Image (tube, rainbow, N blue to C red; front, side, top):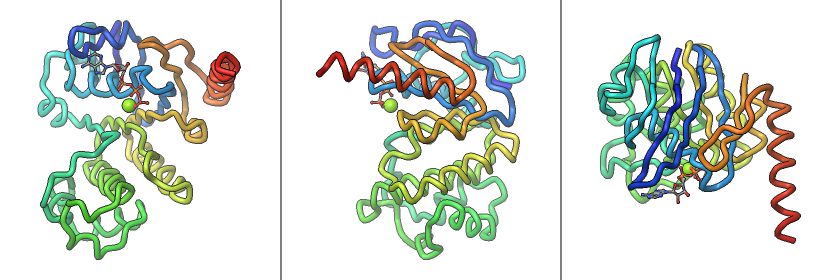
Length: 231
Ligand SMILES: Nc1ncnc2c1ncn2[C@@H]1O[C@H](COP(=O)(O)OP(=O)(O)OP(=O)(O)O)[C@@H](O)[C@H]1O
Ligand SMILES: [Mg+2]
C-alpha cells in the first residue's frame, strides 16, 4: 500500500499541494479529479520524486519520501506523463523492451494489441512522425509492460480520441488485475466510473473523497457553479 500523510508539494517557492492524506491500497483504482491548475500533475510529480515535498510518503509502511526518482522507480512506482517525453530517436521496440519486465516479444505484441497499436510500429522511431495519440499509447504500453506496483497515469485520455476510451479502460483494469495501485488523474468525468474511489482536488487540497458516482456529481455541481459565475 502507498500512503501519503500531510503531503505538501512545492514548485519554485510556491506550495502547490497543501497537506494531503490518502491511502492507496493494492489493486485499487483512485481517480483524482480537478480543474486545470488544481495541482494534479504536481501531486503526481511529488509522489514520483520530481518535485520537493514535505510530509510522509510510505510504500508498504516504509518511508520513500527521501528517495530520488530512480530509487522510487526501482520499487515499482511509475508515472505516465501528461506530455510524454519523446526519447527522441530511439526505436520503439527497444524503448518498450527496456520498460518491459518480461523482455519477451510476445508480451510486446499482446500489449500493443491492448493499447490499439499495430505491430509495425515497433520498427518506427520515437520522433515527430508519431502523432500525439500514438505517443500516449506507447507510453501506456510501456507502463503496462513494467508491471508496476503503483501506476500514476496523468490524463491518459488527453490527445486520445473517444473511440479509444475502451483501450484506456482495458489498460487500467489490467494494471489492477496485476495487483497495481492505479492513480488515474483526469478532468474527464467519463473516466471517473473506472475508479474504486475518487477524489476532488481543488487548489492543492482534497475537498471530497468517496464513491466515484457521488464524487462525480459533486464535481459536476462544483463546475456548474463556476459556469454560472462566468455567465
Ligand atoms: N514553477 C512554478 N512555480 C510556481 N507555480 C507553478 C510552477 N509550476 C506550476 N505552477 C502552478 O502550479 C499549479 C498547479 O499546476 P499543475 O500542473 O499541477 O495543475 P494540473 O491540475 O495538473 O492542471 P492541468 O489540468 O492543466 O494539467 C498551477 O497553478 C501552476 O500555475
Ligand atoms: Mg496536469
